Image 1 (tube, one colour):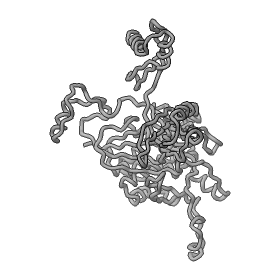
Image 2 (tube, rainbow, N blue to C red):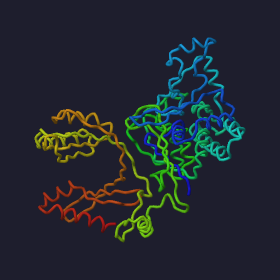
Image 3 (tube, rainbow, N blue to C red):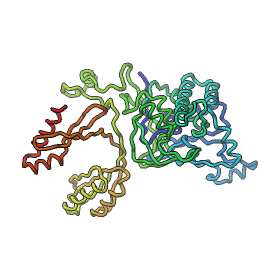
Image 4 (cartoon, rainbow, N blue to C red):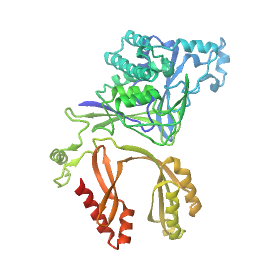
Length: 480
């Protein structure tokens, strides 16, 4: 059996999130500390981890506390123990650009601290020497050098300099070393054979770097995505979600980016980011096994083999002769974050409900629908549901409160997979109709004439809507 790791990145990826997920999956922190000590830079940092909650979900948060940021202790232990914990603990150390996830990245030092920090700004050859001299496990050494090589190549391309001259102050040399080598140590400890990653969310906004503000996604991340053809999408969150360090890790290890490969799930590791976001800020590491010889990119499973396996368990799959598609498409589709607003109403005119539909669509709703329900005391009512992108949530809430009698709205944030769509036009004997063509990659999976075009022609030409719809489809298929 091959052991598989799948990194599910709904809120992006960063080095500290990777290690947090590995710790949550069972990698001992003491093991990481012991092996990282071999790098010979242990005086520059302290490591710690704790369980935290992100939107009520528990995950492991990993911290690299840089020595320059740690509080100085006096010669009086009693005085030190009396200090307020908020004065003796580093806040989160999430402000060194490109290491930690989901923070505004700015950090200022006094003159002494600046001198210490400057001494930790390393070029690629020095970092490679640190890794090689540590005598780490062979896979860990090779992986670590490969990740730093990709990161340096990306930064070099952005700045127009050789990779050997890349100055690692922008990725925080010390914590980048810990993140990258620590991730490689954890994956080696778990004995993972294959690595897969989900599509990456783009994020948005700006971050502060050593040379000023940078637009998100940052240039190095964009370069890595371009070089490795990483599928990306917007989840509506305007934060830095994918850091260069985390992106370099993904681009080095990924056999493919896309849906989870077929596997028998054995363990889950949850690595927390620093902020609470609209959806749980957690990197989810799926660890599973697949049979030797099976392909993680197979799109269709042989129906006979499936039936035999199911019958061996005393079950019957079905009697169809059609091939049964696997749970994933071989082509990556778009993933987006949506807000779902729900409320039940039992004292509003149906005419008003119709008006609410129009008002919600005007406010930015993607879809609106109702369902009949029976409420308390056997009162008949409707369940009103509106779906929108997160940026239109407030506007849709305002419409529901203004136009209905509800006193409360339930809100949940979900992700949905959507097919790419193209609009084509066909000509029928009654007129022109737009056709919506849905694709997964280059594969056409759904073709539908636009309702309004068919309806308008049906009204004007005094023919049935179904006839216009049929002719439009026939015209499209004849053309292709």
